[in-house]
Structures are given as structure tokens and as C-alpha cells.
Amino acid sequence: MPGVPYGLLKAACDEGALMIYHGTWSDAQKAQVDKFKARFPCIKSIQMFELNAGPLRQRFLSEQRAGLKLADIIQDTDPGTLDAQAAEGLYLNYKISNDAAYADGMKKSGYWYPLRIALVGVAWNTDLVNDKDAASLNDWKSIIDPRWKGRAGVIDPAAGGVVYLPWYAWFKLYGEDFIRKIGELKPQVYSGTNPGSAALASGDISVLLNASETGLMPLQSAGAPLHWSFPEPATGPVSGEAIVANAPHPNAAKLYHEYAFTTEGYGLWQKLGGAPARIGFKDQRPIAAEPWYHYPAKFLDTDPADVTKLYPKIADLFHQYVGVRQ
Image (cartoon, rainbow, N blue to C red; front, side):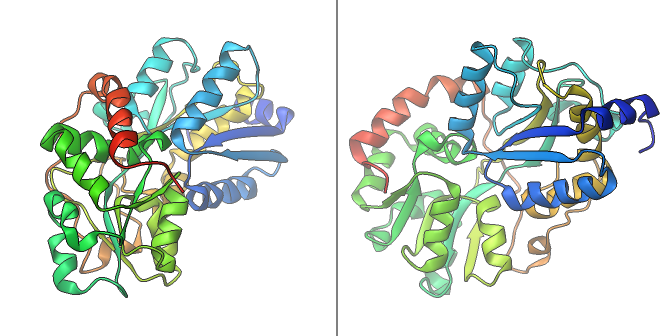
């Protein structure tokens, strides 16, 4: 790779192993890892550990507090968390050779770099929702319409990451009563993006009210009858990747981090993982060319500190009005 010294490649090959902690975008991660293995067969052992963003964050912090050296690469869906963990010294300071390809507002140079813009909206099963009803789902306020009672699903805000942000948006935009009205729909509650998306694809529910397109895209590309929209103001935080400061295989981690943000490596991940966050990068996802797919024009202005601060309040309202997950 241009800009990567031979000494790094040799040191990475000598280590020969890598552990990646990643979120629920396994198809995107596997596509990138498979090509990395082909490019660098000397990295013989690459392990991938997947969890929802919230539990993954908790696990990583617990391991760090205990002084355990397990993860080489860590990913997170919350820029505030990424910045805070970088400030705490949990990430290695390593500036990638493609640093300039990523805007300053979407990275912390030398610490973490953006994987995607993680869009979350409302999704529906096109076999179960007619076009007229689907058109109404371009407005957040439409999701509490009684027509969705007994037909809707939601993802527990405890899953964290991008699927928590719609709960935050609903509370900030419309207040406590909006969450109460979601509860009146008697929605099915799911523990994370993947089970919620699978339930929608199978027809267990007709609409998923806080759907991450990362979970939807692999199912839709495999033929599942799924469409989705992004009511405005939309929620779309940056997800990022960093090298762990006490990584057991720091040179292999640097090599992977470099590859992940090359044009090839980034494109492989982005095609399945989410909207691009690289400057001037054409969206590789086939979904972007579909006539029904519309990228949002307006996003919710969020303060990461406020998003974190309000979580306990929103979680309490969820348990008060909506209930427990399936």
C-alpha cells in the first residue's frame, strides 16, 4: 500500500494475528476482512467479535479497566464515545496515510476514522404495507398512527448505537407523550438491529420504527420485501474505528487500519455497511440507485453529551410505556 513502510508490513507479518471488535455489520466486515486476508496472507489468524454497540462498548471498557489485552481494533457508533475514549488514552495515536481523505468533522485525526454515516429510519415490509400507507412513513409523526397498532416493532434503546438515536429524537422533538403513544401501539420489542430486521423481513411485523439500514440492506439484497425512509430531521451519526492502545498485535492492527481506509478497503466495507463518510466517495451500495431510496436532506442537530445525558431518562420512559423486549 502506498505510504505504508515495509517495516510495518514485516512487523505485522511477524505478529500474524488480529482481533477485531465490531458492531452488527458482519457482512460488511467480512467482505473487508476476506480481501485483507488475500492481500496479506501472512496475517494468518483474524478473529472477529460482534456485539450490539451498547454491550460491545461495555465489554471493551470492562476489559480495559481490568488490564486485559484482547482487542486490536475497536469500532463504535457514537462519535462522543470515540472522542471520550481517545481522550482517556484507550486508543493508539496512529495517523493513517489516507488521513486527508476524511473530513476533520468526521474523524479525530490519528485516533479514529469514520466507517460510515449510520442512517436510521422507518422500514416496512412491502408485502404487508400498501403504497399509500408507506408514503405516510416519511413523517416521524405518522409512526404513532393507530393503523400500526399490533403491526409495529421497535428496537430497545438499550441496544445503543444508532438505534437509540430515534428514541432521543422523538423525545427531543415531541416529548414524553410521543413515547407513550408508541407504547399504545403495543409494538414487538427486539434486542438489536439484526433480530428486528429479520422479524420485519419474515412478516412477523409490518413496520420497524427505528430501523438501521445496515441491518436491512443484506436482507433486501437477498430478496426480502423491504423498503425504508428517513423522516426528517433524520438521525445519522458517524460510526468509527480505532486501534486499541494496548493492542496485543499493534502492527497488524496498524496494517489493517491502513487497509480499511484505502479506496479498495473502504469501498468493500461501505458497499454493505452504510452511507459513505469519505470525501468525494461514490456510494457503492446498489440500494442508492433504487428509485424509492432517498438520502435525507436535513439531519437532527445533536450534542453527543446531551445524547448520553438523556439516555437514563429515555430508558425509563421506554420501560414505563413500551415494555420489555422479545
